[in-house]
Image (tube, rainbow, N blue to C red; front, top):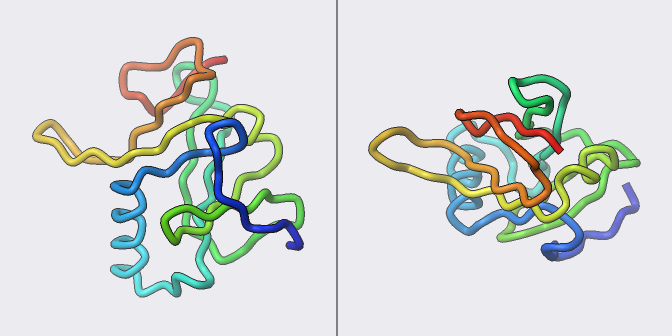
Length: 121
């Protein structure tokens, strides 16, 4: 866990919008978690209709191999394998008439499914 905390740039990691950060903080507060201890794990896993699915999880555990970033007061961890697929991804939060939820804008994706929760590279 000796990885330094850095401000993410578009080239190096996931970008969390202020709107998404606000929603993440609301979830942390609602679940009565400690903002200083909790991390937002962002990752990918095999599956979904397009090949890979996005993963968002609040956790207090961090592996030595995880990259650690901080944005808008949120500590973000990404495993090295996921980082290959997520570099430059923007995570936003939409609250609209047709639904609400986190939205991923992945410039690396060659295609994505209609629901937006899986992608291919």
